[in-house]
Image (tube, rainbow, N blue to C red; front, side):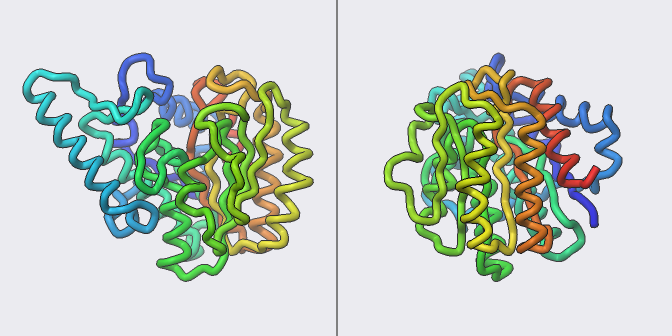
Length: 316
């Protein structure tokens, strides 16, 4: 069985301005690393389609889509009149002329990967996409995110393909507040995560729903401590839940070299985490995993970490 690699050129055209950490160079760094190491040769490359409204509406409201479209229309009008080329969603998040199309292709990558994995043409897949998604709530874009790629794909697996149970694993340094907002209380989903706390977006600790397994950890926590928590808390819940498919919000900003967080993980920790995810998928889900890029802003550490993650997915 093969590992898919889902990309689209528009994901590089989304640009929030000079100096922004969530930049097109992130995908270039990943691509260069996978080519240099030969990992790319072992992957089945797919160009991602754009997600349909129907797919997006499994995780978002019509009002959310309409607000983003209206903001983009105002941006285009202002730019035509000599105004700025981007429109701000919040102080950290902006859209340019390519953003909404990039966001549709990012969500579409996750949906297409889900289709291919469930069809059995791929065992698992990694989506090298941006903008990321796990901060996008049902009715709110924020934190560099516009559509919640993993939540869209998880609901696609449940509502379109009829799976009964899916797991979401989020190992970004930031809490996946958007994914929790969309999936909390859905007993067909078990979401497990760890994240630095207190830290942006300052959520995840206030009475989470029973299907949310949140592990807030303090700044400077190292990888071995995170591994112990995963083994003690995530793994029993995942084993009891017996997911039929696993979705991964793969954020690599918990790496010790990444200045946007203060956790102490290394590539070997991501190898270990991915191997534990893969063990669950092999035992209960026919190996079915769809992993979507979230954070990771130190370009070299990001590229090395994605390589490590993908090597485990592809049994390299």
